[in-house]
Amino acid sequence: MKLVSAVIKPFKLEEVKEALRTTGIQGMTVTEVSGFGRQRGHTEVYRGAEYQVDFVPKVKLEVLCDDSQSEHVIETIMKTAHTGEVGDGKIWVVDASQVVRIRTGEMGRDAL
Image (cartoon, rainbow, N blue to C red; front, side):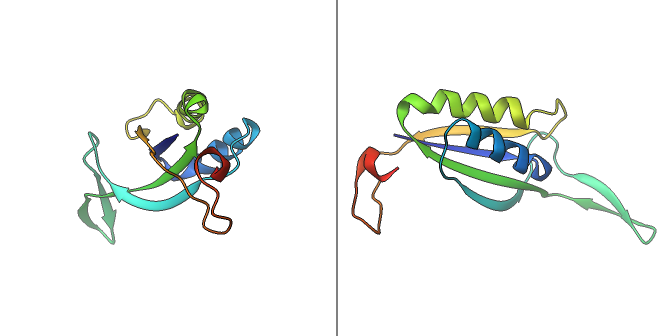
């Protein structure tokens, strides 16, 4: 099993969510996060004063899936979240050695 995590632009969340649903993904976790990468934040003006915004608001989504689905999940997120602009985000994948559904005690693939 794999845990696919992606940090994307917030306005792309609904589009990515719907695209993943149509591919058969049944669940995901979404968290509002902030950070910076190569874009290193940006400058804004508020009431005539210019100030630096170091952390840019993003959305982190996590999808737990079977090994056979992970490449498809990655491709779907890449295609849907892509704008071509700086700050589109990142995707990373880690192995999930064990998954347990708390309610039923199911383990492994059955818990997905």
